Image 1 (cartoon, rainbow, N blue to C red):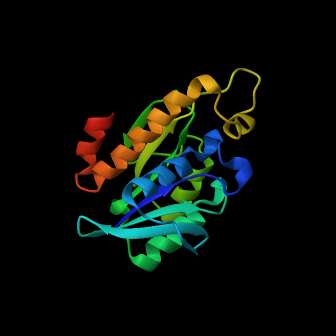
Image 2: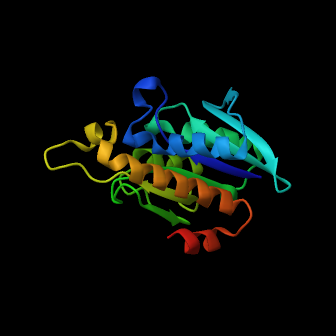
Length: 185
């Protein structure tokens, strides 16, 4: 079994924000894989299907970003999914819009959603796809920035990054993550 988690905040007012790029990737991946996110349980909304003979889950936590681990841990425990078979997709301030980076493990880098996952999973050894959202201009608070929408001049780059992240997720369903990293980094 495999689990792909996209981090974000629930609710219409957050839909198009930088912080919700993980949700956006999951929505696009669900369309591509024809998986309906129609189950609301474990403090999240998810769906699954069998792809290449393996059950694949897509999850969007409904806990708000800072409590993401509260949705991921129960789903992993209930379905007995190995941490080795989890990928988390989230926004990254240190990458410009349009860029993605894959990692096999790491710290939280100041990201509160990842802090929550580290606390609930008890390990930093889970796969990640970081999607660049850029840094705020001087004088703009990070919290306000990540809850803002992308500028019109960034939208094409952002859509390309979302598409790359979707392709990386799909590639991981049939290839080793290290190979996927080498292809997309």
